[in-house]
Length: 271
Image (cartoon, rainbow, N blue to C red; front, side, top):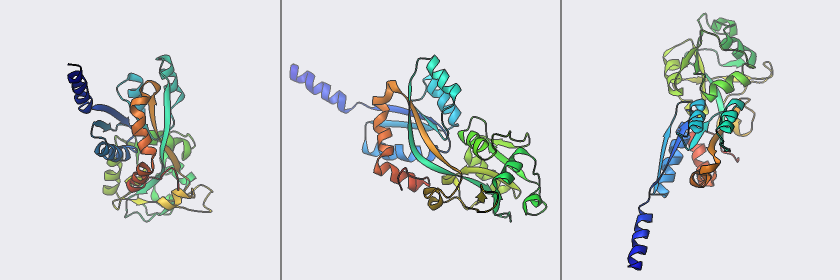
């Protein structure tokens, strides 16, 4: 009878499936999906569900207890830390990769470079026509992510010097929507993670030294930090579930996981 119990326990253990939920940043989404897929192939008992929605959505889900890992393309905010603290929840942060945030336009646009000041002018609404920045006489149509997006916050802080977006800016629910809209609109401009830059849009060279040097986003310029709009990508999780989620996080930080980072189009933690 004792041996039977041992065998039964072994069978139950062998068939045990543990599931995890990841939610948040659309920037991190394609990377997390690929790493989860690879991890589940090697760990048959693991089931990982990955959904987007924005960094703010992911961190809110972490506060509410409806996700195990929050994906974020920005640092957790003080207000979010306070909500977790008020709920008696301590959290852990893991930097999983880096991203070069690309400013993109329609391929038919003749403008190929912008200074930080010009980008600020465009996204705050002070610059309304492409002829003001060396282009043709064409109205600028500005696309942005929604305010729940970490990319929205990062761009506002690091490119716009914390100036407010113009009321005319068109907010999009996902990065893919920005790519599609810009590809169909000649006068459009927006920003996306490096992994989303495709032939349907054109990435601009940018300058953060008032036009002395312009650099375009690429794996090489991101790795050597010559491209000025670089940001870390994060996983946030509660300390109470660390034993459960840490194996997957460690996989993402491993040599194999970091190879996937570069395959997707983001920048691995080590050169």
